[in-house]
Length: 231
Image (cartoon, rainbow, N blue to C red):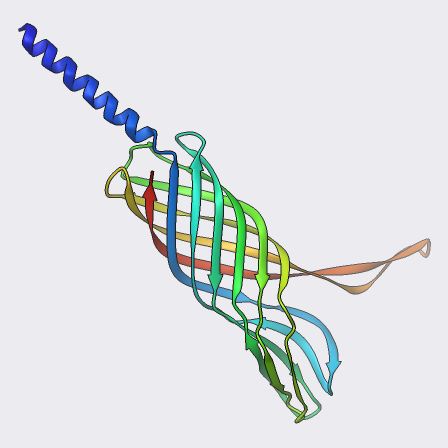
């Protein structure tokens, strides 16, 4: 009887020890691959080389990246997310006789984001839904271009990279095969602030007037799957 109680006590202590070791895993590193649907933005029509440009376009494409998180508690983590999307820079415009979209250059898009993640469910659960949000930057990196405008004008050059403020919101679900290995499926929306253009004049009963700005945002919607390592 004493031996049975001692054996039961040892089993309980071993179980508690395994749980404690599992809970000591504070770092998650994940790599993902997916597809990002991207959008451009309308601009105030502007004549360039005889073509009136009214929209800057950003193509959708394959994306990949990684995320590293440090678990502050069983549910809350902070970390960093990096992602790269394959894309093209385009413009839409028109002349007196023609309308069309012009490919400007290949343009990889990079996200550099600090993120906070909230994990639902039990810390040792096999399935853990999660939500995340973050702030950071989107970097547009177009390459060299040669543009053939609808009116026959040819332009070439390199516009250089541009870094813009970005937000990100997303979520998904993690599936763990063990305490150290799992997979995840996720969706993430990243709006990037491009800038503002004056849209008009606003006046109050003739007392004063001010310029109304129209904010321009480009959007990315990423759908991906990946693998998670927990240390």
